Image (spheres, rainbow, N blue to C red):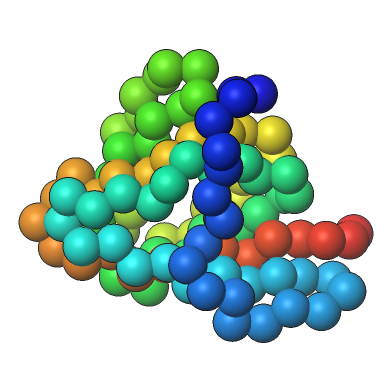
Length: 100
């Protein structure tokens, strides 16, 4: 992992119970979500898509175009930051899965 201080997975928790935690995230063009760690498996729902860049703690750059309405599942373990590299607002929901 990294020695840097990590931020939260999202900007606001919309729902949390013993099974899931649902985060809201909104990034203006050029705005970044701070470096954070995904300790749980999660689903990303692009409410309003954008062209994003994932910068991993290991120094990798991953270009991702998230289309509006797209849904992806991701395994836990990655530490990264997300930057809106496009010219539209990105709005997403991150659903962390706490139990099977």
